[in-house]
Image (cartoon, rainbow, N blue to C red; front, side, top):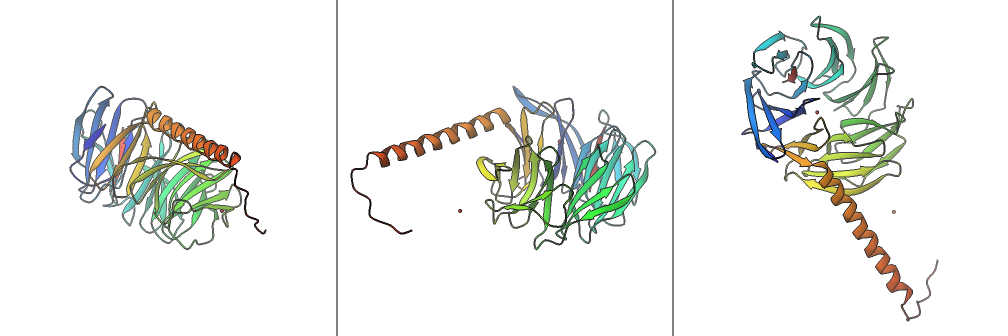
Amino acid sequence: MEIDLGKVPFTMDFHPSTNLVTAGLITGDLHLYRFNADSSPQRLLDIHAHTESCRAARFINDGQGSSDCSILATDLETGSPIARLENAHEDAIFSLINLTESTIATGDDQGFIKVWDTRQRSCCNSFNAHEDYVSDMTFVSDSMKLLSTSGDGTLSVCNLRSNKIQSQSEFSEEELLSVVIMKNGRKVICGSQNGTLLLYSWGFFKDCSDRLTGLSPNSIDSLLKLDEDRVITGCENGLISLVGILPNRIIQPLAEHSEYPIEHLAFSHDRKFLGSISHDQVLKMWDLDDLLQNSVNAQNDQAAASDSDSDEMDVDTKPPKSRKGTLDLIAEL
């Protein structure tokens, strides 16, 4: 299933309980669509939300955010603005995530992170976490820890209870672009600009404990956790791949969106669809069961081919030569 957005998208998100999907565009516009497996997607809203590009959009109880340094809350049914926080940041907002039912976090181009109470429409935490743009964030609700990656090559851990930066990694040689938590909270996975996945052990954030280089040299622009052992990657070359963590391996390429970078990946509310956006101006929704089944079939074919090769070697009669002894709505602009 495909939706022609007409302009380059920077962000997308699925509604948490219904078949709705939103996309934020380079023009500052915000689109909302209803979709079903057996019919064409229907556009419900087309809002000019911001004066500059819309970099992040999320469904929440009552809000949206932007690169003109503002956060906008929009009513889904009417498209009317509910509230706008002008000058929410001193610099353009780059990333946004939901934390709880009433809080969100935003990160800007200069590495500053703010946490907002959407009911009070006020900032409740702030962190000068990085020296460059905040590329991605993820949240651990049990410990109230907010993890962020940045263009300065660092991973930061912000403690929302103490309002302090609890830990920060050493500077990597490459920008860190994406982050997920896996292995039941024991591992933090970061995607980098040179295509390396960096693995950090929880509580030991100064330096990574392991690396996976199989996707290099294409930058890993988006990470989406499938389960505790597998993550879906979206890369600069337009490929969407399934990657195993501990053991670290590229399980299988799942799909090719286009020849352009994958800007964002997200699951529909029922995890039936995997959504992807790229610079080809198209939002694609892939049947997740089909993708994973194709991956299983490919692995089985590879295993069968390997077994066949082994059989041929077993019946080789020539003596061997001797040999000696590696996704209400929030949008950011």
